Length: 381
Image 1 (cartoon, one colour):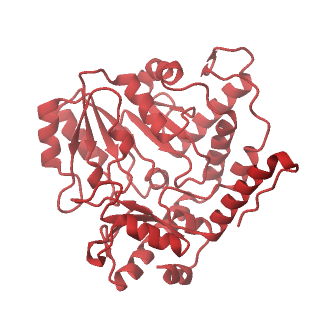
Image 2 (cartoon, helix red, strand yellow):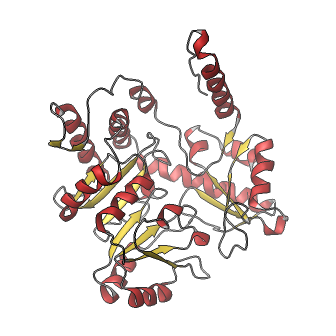
Image 3 (cartoon, one colour):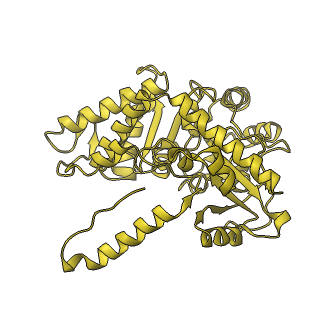
């Protein structure tokens, strides 16, 4: 699959050994992790270019160092490409590609809008909420939950909005198989708590929004964050979209409040990934992932495996292990012994903590990138 070059010389002996180990692992494992994709060749190539010698702290045309025209240009170009992928007008939303990760992008938003006494609403971790939605650094987080149909409990959500009048609500998850209804959430907020801002963490749904398989989150959200590596075949690194009215606050929140200068190779790699996404049939790519997901679930169900989301609208497969008398940790270790990579994950109403869990999470982006056939999927499931 991949071949990693070694460095010549005795001083690199230990490093080469670690590289060999990494290469052997990634080439021998069936990677069903739900948070990875295999990068486009161009993404890997551009990260090997010598793009690391110009200081980058600051924003476009507001750097703290001179002669940053090329870096300004790559950020401006990336913004144009990203807006195009979401069908957005430049005057309504802005894009920043500096965040080092999706979690970092979330933190930039927190540092932009939150104060110590604010309330934040976030999906419960047991219902799929991400850990970065809990540790906001400021304010107090209150959880909303899913109902018995595995959709947001809108009655509870409305009550929480009315009671706490939160500064921010975070819509997003790391193990949620359905599609969030951003319009409905927006309308409830405007009715009950109109000053509440909306952050959409779309790390696991960004592809399907771009491909128009999910409804657009715009103009309902104030901020949107995602990573390039989970399903977009890009580099590790985050992207932040925000309403233009937050331009100055976001700029100040990025540097120096949240992070240093952006990684220059990552800036160029993000840009080339966006170029690639606009050049392919992105809807066909997204549909193939979901097709593989549904086939995988069909085969698991035949084997008596209980899948939480029977017809998910993303690449995520959440498995309930209770009827198999296995914890998520045990299943994770067992599958790893058979060269299959998954991760333990909590399920709704889980009685186990996050380090043990009653479930596990799989994903089909990686095997789709590697062109696994229907027969391949039937064999591994």
